[in-house]
Length: 127
Image (cartoon, rainbow, N blue to C red; front, side):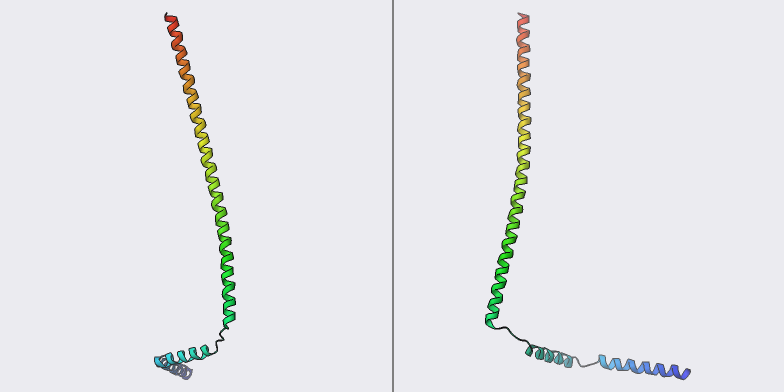
């Protein structure tokens, strides 16, 4: 049992040393390996032909124009709707204010007429 524990500890120590050796790899070799793999992957790339590039470019431009027009139409519609709502609110408020002013003027005229009649009646009585 004790022999098994010792064997396990020695195996753990060896594994730790192996890990240290792996981590102390030369960084320049790793960088070189990276660029070699990038170069080999770059050679595998298949580039499209010029005609295909033009076709795809035109498709992208047409889609952009269509989406742009759709966004413009929605924006224009919402803006017009908001202006209509604002104008309706202002018109209603203005109409109410005009009606209140008219009522106030009518009341003032009525009060002035009543006062004038009262004064006239007072003058007649005093004569």
